Structure formats: structure tokens, C-alpha cells
Amino acid sequence: EELFTATKGSSWSNQAYWLDSEVSICTWAGVICDANARVIELQLGNVDMRGTLPASIGDLEHLRVINFSSNSISGTIPPTIGKLKNLAELYLSINHFRGSVPVEISALTELRSIHLGTNLFADWEIPMTWKQLTNLKYIYLNSCGLIGTIPDIFGSLTELSTLSLYNNRLEGTVPSLADTNITMLELNLNKLSGSLPSLPNKTLKYLILSNNTFTGGLENMYNLTSVKLISLASNNLH
Image (cartoon, rainbow, N blue to C red; front, side):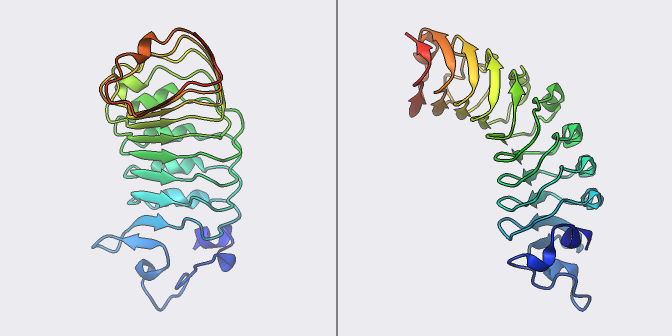
């Protein structure tokens, strides 16, 4: 109910049954429940949500999926999101979120997929504490105000398949990714420097490092046995 009010539910493109006391909450548009009528998913992508997210989102303790992508939500992500210990998928990309990304996300140890790209966050850095999110498989943080360096945490994330950090203001060198199982790495359109990173030779399929300031040679490219696409344009390589 607070979610509906705070995100201007009366103007959503699909608000079927919301706030209708005659029917179960599990029939409301975008609400998915388990067999015990507990809310486990909120599938409200691209429904013209506006306003802000209420702190009470953290009270839906059984939530596994939040999909609010492709809306016009502003304000900050409430820190209470860290209470959602069962959350596995978080889709908040393509909105107008501002402020900082809450450190409380580090508590979401079941998280498999995090999509925060294309938002208006203030300058923020990927926290070292994310290395405890060992179930992460997909990280999409493109175009979302990232600064600083890329932390050396990805060797701990053995499930990680996609790391997308393009179009930010990341700088410095890239830590070794040789011990990861990444299949797609997107670091283009940043200010990254130094030599090309060590990469996972057997798993990497898509490598996009263009529009940075990498220097040196291509030695780390020679053993990529599964690669299908490499983009290194607009660097200082030889």
C-alpha cells in the first residue's frame, strides 16, 4: 500500500486490483506469491512508477525478486533493502535514483543478479564488502556514477558470469580477473589505465575495453580460447 502511494500508483500503466480489499494481495498486478501467500516477487518493470521507494519495502522479508526497472523512480534506494535476506534478483536500472547506493546491499548474500545501471547516483565506489556476495552471477552497473578504482574482489565471486561497468568514471588499473569464470566483461567508456588485465582464458567470450587509456601490448589476449568478440579501440595499445 505504501509502495503504491509513494510511487504514484494511480498513474501506473498497470494497477489491476491494487488496494482492492475484496481480493487477495497475490492477485494485484505484478505481485507474485508463494504457496503460503507470502509475497516473493514484485514485477513492476516499465509501468510508469514515479515518486520514491518507501522504507517499508524492507518489511517484505520473503521477497526474492524486485523488478522496478525502466520506470521514473527518484530519490534514494532505502537502506532497509538490506533486510531482504532472501533477495536474489534486484532490477532497478533505467530510473532516476540519486544519492548513494546503500552499503546495506552487502548483507544480501543470496543476491545473484544486481542491475543498477542508467541512474543518477552521486559519485560512488564498488564496496570491498561486496566480496561476500558470493552468489552474484550478473553485475550491471553501467552509466551510474561509479568513480574510483575497480576493487580486487572478483576472485571471491566464483559464480560471476557478467561484469558490466561501462560508461562511468572508473580509473586506475584493473585487478587480475584470471581466477574468475567471467564470460562477459564490459569496461568501455571509462578512464582505466595501465596494461590490459589478466583474464579468464577458458570462459571469456565477450571483452569490451574500448575508450579507455590502456597502454602496452596484447600479451593477455593470446590465450583467450573461447572469445567471440574483442573490442579494444581508442586506447594506447601497440
